Length: 471
Ligand code: SF4
Ligand code: SF4
Image (cartoon, rainbow, N blue to C red; front, side):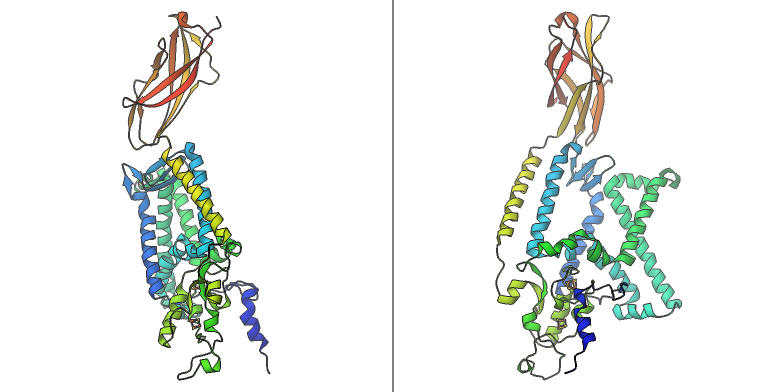
């Protein structure tokens, strides 16, 4: 028997290197075939909804606050119209831990579904940039042809046009991301004011535009297969119970080319006709028939491609489907393993903690401190005065007129300004003085309470000290 070692080497090469790298270590450019089918249609609906949410969120406002904003410069975060400040950092910490546990839990059960269906990288790449590419250059075979041909008029127009559109989409994405950071109003100011007044902002936008352009025009699937740390985690998170996009090797093997009227079963052939359509549509360039691989982003394009073939040869759909390895081997259903149970308990615990923290979160954050380094002063009217500094954060979406009162009957509060106005989602820092007649001082350190009223309603109370002379 003649053994074709070259063929064996080619088949087994997925064990040695990722699909987009050749023997010499050079990049293999992936030209995925345009996907179509039920799963792709579902994915389009999910993607369009997420794209709408992503582009519209900074502009959807309620009482002046956007749906989402992550202003790291002013340390102000808005989530579902609710404003969070650095004082709420503990809530973010819990939410971050919850996010990580959720991702782990989700991955254990559903594999890398997030990557193919929710991740912005995939959605931008497959639903925006790739579709523009198909629209301008045609399907994969035309793209290959265009790549191989010399730089004639057609290639210059198509390639040039594609990259101009790519750059423009990257520019819009860059602006959108900036709107998430500085807010849509600030972004609008940058857009509408003369360039000279916002050189810094424009530079940031241009830098990020080129980063996005580089990622989507050139890096592409390399982000998912070699850069993304989440992708690298798959090896430890997935097990044989995890639902993944998988090839039913029991049903598909032994693969053999399709021949009309051939009795495949009697020859020991499976349902896979080795048409390689599942490979052609794969955006990461893998052959799913080699088993679960780290490059697979669970985009389900190969399911559609194979279902289409199965229909064509009158076989049941689902040779490639969303299924666990255990289910393929012995038909078993999803099992609540100890690992899954432990993560579920942890997730529920964290979720309850987060809800409690959110419900009990104070709408105002007040600190009142005696001016650093200052001591008491004696005024001409035989009064003792202390200087204080108030820091007041308004986490609500309402403006307030602030009034300060104290439980100390003999004390009088004197503000440095006529009126204290605390605007919605803003921070106020002001100095004020408390005076007390000298004859009323009986102790060098008196504990007093300062009551903070907003629009006439008590919103906070702070304990502090009033310092006087030793008697
Ligand atoms: S599309 Fe289906 S039949 Fe064709 S090679 Fe892939 S698994 Fe086999
Ligand atoms: S193997 Fe299938 S699901 Fe995985 S990335 Fe390729 S086409 Fe998508």
